[in-house]
Length: 154
Image 1 (cartoon, rainbow, N blue to C red):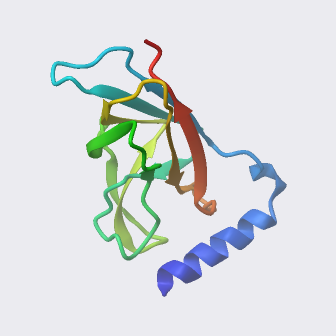
Image 2: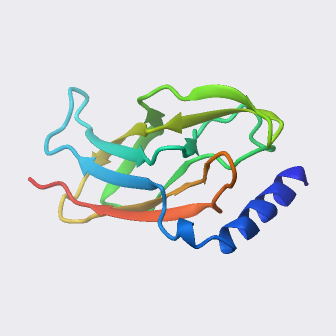
């Protein structure tokens, strides 16, 4: 309940501020042209985070309390298979958050992720979206969904 109340308050503060019309996180999605030693393609995902903002990890110590984690969603397809979970390449910062009153894991400046894929049909795109939440010292933005669509070049 505390989480919902905090998210609602933070969302309302967003509506009152015109300065936050753009997301403070800038995403790039790249897929390898060739397979790795295991015969899998690597989807590399990078989030560049504006100064004074932080984005939360996929792995939060108290997942039912506090901020929402970053999540990767892939459209089901016969053209590819997701292999394992999306890995965090840069270790997040772990800290007790006074606002949420829980331990949180977050990224400042940059976050990097990697997802392994088995691709059966290169003519079909890999589609999905990333859902994430960001905060600064005074406010949090409501969860943002960023769609992506990629194809193997060769």
